[in-house]
Length: 407
Image (cartoon, rainbow, N blue to C red; front, side):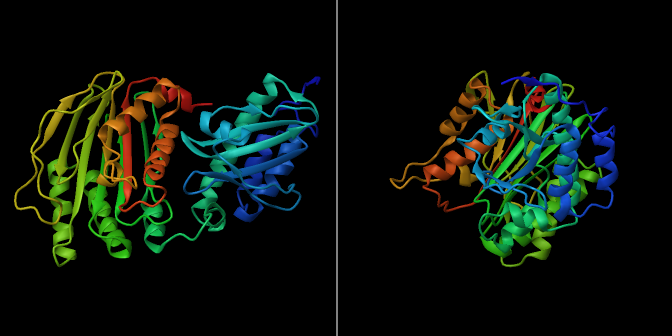
């Protein structure tokens, strides 16, 4: 197949700059027309077809975005497809075979994987076209995220089965699943994606600190989701007011105790990482201890007495701390991860959790792909039917992994 010298973004076939044109078109663009407008501007780039695929909530499938003038496509699996490889590895992938060239490009909002874009050209794209197409895909990702903030179009598309009311609340409560800077990578996941109830996580990157929290509200369904929502609100209020971790935990405890009767409570771990020094502080409120994965081994941080769960505390929690080493991965998780049981009664366990993270790192997987596969393993261990919610958030300190999440 001959290589094509596809026109650059600054000199399209019509003499129009596709990026500037797409930005102008996006200002009053409804979400329902994004697929059509993307295809039109991909033609300016030199592609004869363009299709956007978005990842579903569970990150099992890539679902095509339909529109006028957009060729019909079917959803594909993230595992085992060429499109899925572009999503998993965060890199452009060319489909093998004769005929029109097919290029798959990851859509990234910062470091957050949104989906992929499929571009079809008559001839094989050269390196310059691929680089410019990646910029085009990044802009489409940004437009997708902004439209998702005030439209239900993408949310409807991404659900492959009905989303429970509690899960609807929890998904809207979450920060982006992945964040990366020059010092840290943060990534999280939760299951069961369509039925999650009381489990959640949160984080914020405010130089020079990174704050993280994982929480497990007692019970299931809507009552647990409402308690979780109030707890996250109190957490963010305390964090944004600049309070230390112990005071934030006390504020969360007061909200839960004051607003939820009948001894309702939540376990939680709140952590704060100094990106400059690598000092990690945390408070443990009736929760599993943080884990550290270092040089391919599971490390337990120094022993620190846990406090009672939030909503049941009589005294403030103890502040714990440890010194991280460059490359350390800190994992905060709810008990639904390690206590997932196989049909034979075997726990998933901490060692299996750490081993999966180590093996994923050795295989060169990105942190968000590590989390996706890890939660898939938790679900598979319990044959797809978790008896308890499971959520997890992981932060890497100064690893270099952030470079793999940049196009």
